[in-house]
Length: 148
Image 1: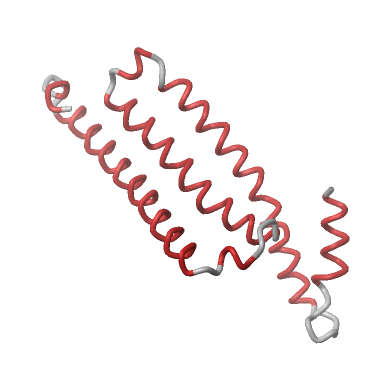
Image 2: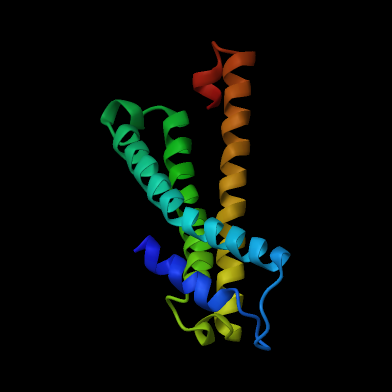
């Protein structure tokens, strides 16, 4: 499968739109972008597997009683959302899996930008809350259970 992509890359991408051959700089840029695109799928798979492992570990009964575990569970959900909304969208666009007309509608752009912003902000606020909780645990360990 990788060989087919490289053949397609060599035959179509290196020829400019006006029919002339691409320069060495253009070839390097296209080859680099191609390699970046091929790295997205392993990142998505690794992120999914590790977040699913987080779900399994953090969903045990003993772990659910700790507030830190609840924050980490929510953070795993937010991280999956960020990863799927950002990486899958970009990977689908770059690999031409979905027609480009889908991505250039006004409704899609508004929904994608809003959802991406909410999920990214949610992830950032969870990290801030987790940091604040750990600060309370370190600053006053005896009162931490009451405060958290």
